[in-house]
Picture 1 (cartoon, rainbow, N blue to C red):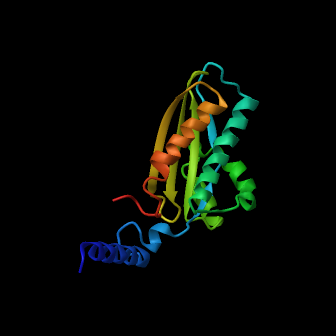
Picture 2: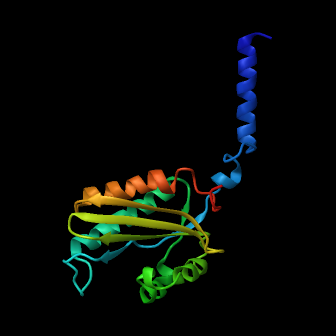
Amino acid sequence: MTIRAAIASVLLAITAVMAMGVLPGLGTEARAAKKVAVFDFELLDTSSEFDLRGPKPDEVRRLNLITDEMRKRLKDAGYELVDLAPQAAQIEEAAPFRNCNSCELRIARALGAEIEVIGLVQKVSNLILNINFQVRDVATGQVLRAGSADIRNNTDESWLRGVSYLIRNRLLDPPLTGKAAP
């Protein structure tokens, strides 16, 4: 057997093993689409600009922008997004999730989700913000992933950069399997 034939044979064998899902992290469980509930990002304004009426319209728009980006990127990665609309009243009643002692797990279960994503943007000032997310197993409540990114500047671009960093480096690397990382 020539060296070329041996290399081709080894590559063929590796391809076959990968296709059968035998290599760790490449099996069907790791690639299986998981039903995920991505709840809207919330704002915790601890700045001197805090308004009792709630977030400013541009910040509400940015919260929607980064929530939509999170959903889009998870869908593009093969996850099935569950529709939150059937539990809209319960979501509104429970919000903000940071104060409800994991009540969103019950909502995610009712929606048929296997994993959930919650997010929070803390506004320290108009210049300093912090974007946080947490992914949990809906059945057990176990935290599967979490991440935080400090951003500077209260703009669409900075918010999107912050959430994009978290998605690339904390959420999807390595891919979610619904199990805690070893």
